[in-house]
Image (cartoon, rainbow, N blue to C red; front, top):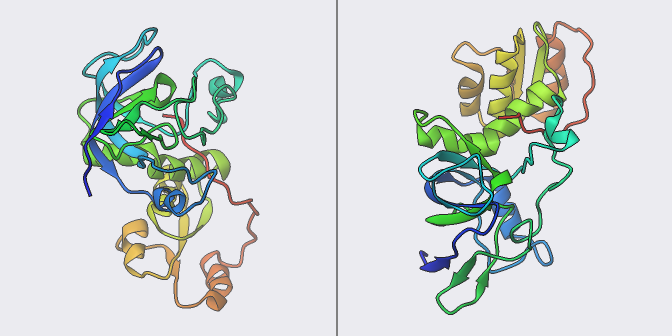
Length: 254
């Protein structure tokens, strides 16, 4: 169902964006099924997108009308110790924005035609023709990138690349095992290849994912049954030892 709403102009340090391409992430579905207080409704979901800056509020210096941008759920003030670190960009000023509305004043820029407030989602809310985000949630990108590919950079791809580059710190010649070849898992495979992994082991129950993630020739895969996975690992890794990693996700710095 498509509903007409009102989107307020941006306040100070805010940007109003015309969304030109967005995609559905499973996180949208997860939060949609949640109950209060996290599952706050009515709410505009969506956080993988690309758009064009329509207008900016006071004090916005790095973005102007017409810029192509990614609205991202991971805010970056670009000034705190964590944002300046080369290890990660988990901003200590804004933190993980799970609050329902704008990060600075905790109010919404959306309302329906009856005047009822519509809440934001992780600082983005891209399932709307227009959205308002804090400047810390917007990243300018080159205008020549295809928008249908660019929108994936704002969540799934950057999460997968970050997992390979920042968390696991894949090194040249590494053997990498990936559990689940969804959007994030496939991005991990790309990140591992870019880092020079010599062997990638994919684990998924959908055989169609292996060619997508590992190429036509493939490296190795496991998909028949969970009980067979350990034997596949031993065979694929030529019985070498593996280094344990606590499973985490990280966004690559854009």
